[in-house]
Image (cartoon, rainbow, N blue to C red; front, top):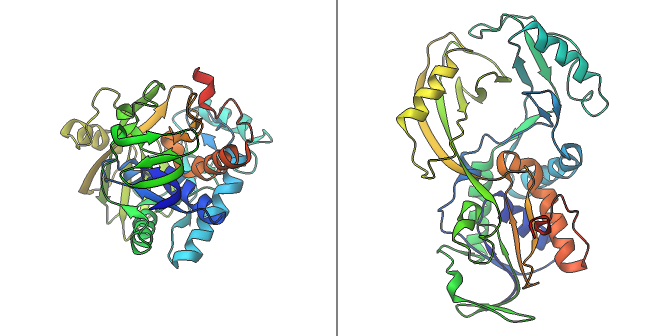
Length: 346
């Protein structure tokens, strides 16, 4: 088999890059062994404001200008619904936080998202003595359904290979790649925290941040916005909500734990005061980087071997832009900004 690209991994990074290849009529195959599930279990929210400090997320506005049309195009292609507009209500814990909200909402980068007022309206089941700050023009992507639909499409086109990729079997020449009878011009590694087993990029400082989430059923809670406090409470419809998320830097398994469940339930009870039932408990490993920037670029020795990884907690925002930048870098020799490029670690 001869293709232009081999892609390793089909999370949001692999999806975004393969769609960029499709746009430019490049052929490819994707290896996916379902060992990484961070994109599937993610909350899927996009939001350009850091809600702890009311500061802008790095490069968020530029990312969203690319990301929103990207997901809407996928909805048209697969005739399905992935993108949902969801406002965010940040629960204030003090008057000081209220004052900080007013200051931040007046800044040019944030004024389109932060309403410059305190929301005092009562919502049954929500504990908010100091009111809320409302974020608009935010939303979520149903990453689980999106990836399921895309994988089905790739399987039908015989572009998906459901097996683990063995880097020891990879043969790299100056102008070609060969792997188990498949010849390609280039290979892109989108293997999430599998990077640790990738001998070509394992030198990069990626951290594994385990996250656990709950799905709850709360019949008495009726909100159509995300509540953010000690945890987030994201409406899924029919009184079901996704609650998250934990951060665990020591446990690198993808198994849900009683300790994680207890932490989430305890924090959840500080912001809602109605009965709820935990109906599911899921976990995944986020591929994160200390400087909160992605890992994009070609290998320092092999120009036809590249990486797209480290999207962290904001993968739905950054993946489409990162894929575009990497494609232009590999095909048009455009220089990557140092904040994106793995060259910053050389």
